[in-house]
Image 1 (cartoon, chains in turn green, red):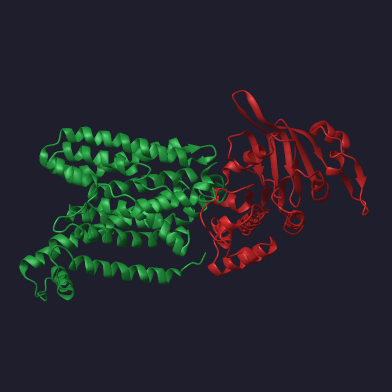
Image 2 (cartoon, each protein chain N blue to C red):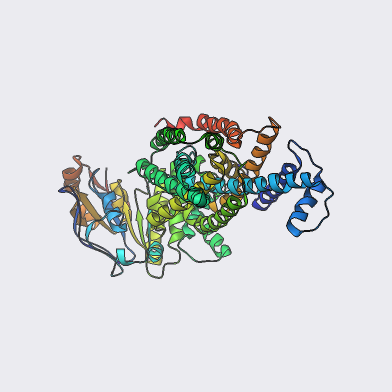
Length: 342
Length: 252
């Protein structure tokens, strides 16, 4: 299979990301000119007054669109990296935080905190609770799917079905106790939405992305070795049990924070690593950073669509990613089903 | 270089492995033989520490579990029978995974990869995707990987081969075994190979161990161990002993 050079792919993705950001600033229920929108962002960051936009237009840029773009970039990058790592950890290209139920588990944690944590601490309680529940879910799924012959794909996917159903019931019963306002917020959030972007979750997800990107990159070679099989990785000097535990905790942090910030956004973690593998190969040293770039771009574009399709209203972005991702998942199934009959 | 004493492994009272003593010297190729289920693969796993066998396993006089994982990886490598790899790595990238425990510059690594892929006759596959390779091709790529892994050993390395010839065609079977003998002779490698073809043991191994029900049933020079009587006792088939033109013994 033909591969693209890594520098070229990086360049293309950076261009797409920049172009996509600019489009996301300009387009929406209120279209704004490109140069002025950019200047408005510069003004916002540097305190200058170069943009000739009206105050309310300036507010649309800096208070609505810019935070959403930033959150989309962070959450998209986190989800794509976590997807790539999970696929490596489970040695299975179908693992995705959404499909195997980790996102649902984290969502239960987040909902519990949204409804019951006191307002004063909810900014931290929601991500922490999402992380803890995400971690428990990952450990549960991992121990279920682990057999002597390796990771069982059937168990993995069925565990995902079971946990998603269970989480749905859990979230349903919790929302029974929520008031009307919380309820609408909950149901939107459950479908995945970047509308709740604020300084706090942008800061938190940026910090998480930096931490994860560094931690994952340090383990990229070990992840490559793990793809050969656990015994082989051990023979190559990798401390496999420790590596697995570290990766599980790290992905749970990533998924927990992504879910706490933006709800359940599926398929980014599944689709993005596949696209990157197809273009530059499965080596985690390049797969992980390129997935981050590609995930950031994809989620941002999905959010742009979510804002444009039914304007002036908007769709939850999770619906858009599912519309893009589900057919992709089906295509993967069709391509690989022959090899699964065993 | 390798010494096993009272190595045993039980699951619920059932003894799966019980090796009184086994020793391998530097520069020796040992054939590991036995009917199916005799404990050959289990023995390899006990040596690498994958199964928690009790007893003593020493590599260069030091208990294997006391080696640091990186040092051990530089001195002990296993060629697996098959691989779980499903991701589309190129063959040369799979070989490069052998660099994991090593520290060498990129250029030096690339030189080693090229040299070893040539040696294991898979250089022409370098750019091919793993899923498109045949079983035998994959095994030769993996062999290049494990040899790379041992290329910075400070003491004589131990190479464990789990059925290295099972997926190969006739010509490749012999070139792999010739390579094992050459590594032993020229670089002091200790090699243990699980083999099913008794003639390969007769022609390539310095020593052989015959396992049955987890125990050593017989051991010694292949020519002494592999007689028609012994073979019949363990495999329920009596071969004919013949002598080849060049004086080598063979069983047919």
